[in-house]
Length: 381
Image 1 (cartoon, rainbow, N blue to C red):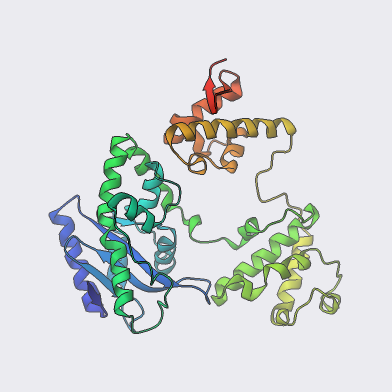
Image 2: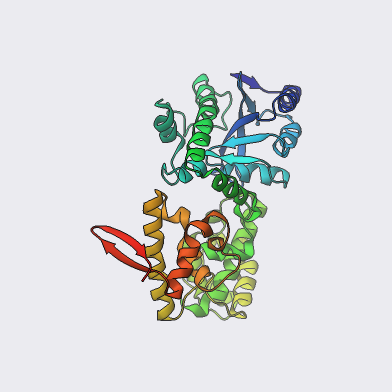
């Protein structure tokens, strides 16, 4: 375990890794990060752990004046495979810092789900399952922004990439034995979608729970959510520091006709004063637009019946293949499938081969669903 606290040390490490690539085309590095984001919108990178066969390097990203440019170049090098576990937040950090997506990424959490080891399995559980080793997670929620880091924190951070090498190799073997390695390669391509890591403020309202909000207020909901996201990003503060969720809903449905009226109403809070004009402009903008739900909705009962039937097919195939149902298809996937969206992931790749063709057959009446004992089965009618 080697702690790096200078730009020159990071540069030397990256040169060594580049040499490692040239000498061994199958070489890979394991990576993890420690970060904090309790008081910020964007995650604050604290530590970067890099695992090589001989050593683990810990880069202190909070060292004053340290330049991680060489590390970012390494992450963007498609010749070097980088192995993460549950990479979404790590990818978000690097994409935000560089505005360029890391390349040649493999995620052992996704690999494990494709290998039938459970959806969203944690690193500790996976290490125990595959390596029969119990990790010490005592420092998992420690203060990663505080300096100096303790030896316990450093050892915890190093362990996160040390065992990841063996986990990755074990999962490769399992996936190849199951003839699912091509599934894994295909699934990793989804990690390069920028929308996973950067919220478009105009689409932020899709994350709101609008079940109890009448549709006539959807336009205001969209405009207020957009404003909140824009300000949170610009100020680098959590969204609830701008407008709390519980305060957002009364603003959506207010009947106030002027900003003065709104300020005198029960929904107004003192913290809104600094953005009062922004809030009122958002409300006026929202009232002027008519929007449908941000989520795909099946209006007809017939389509809803088809959705329920296809969910049974997904459950049947997922059970037979020892896969999680949401890995195979989410409800939104099924809705877009029914509507014939050519971009639906059930119409492409391993999902189409495994279950998409069966869904087509069920909709066309060429295949049925029945119960045998306690199992749900598919058969031709």
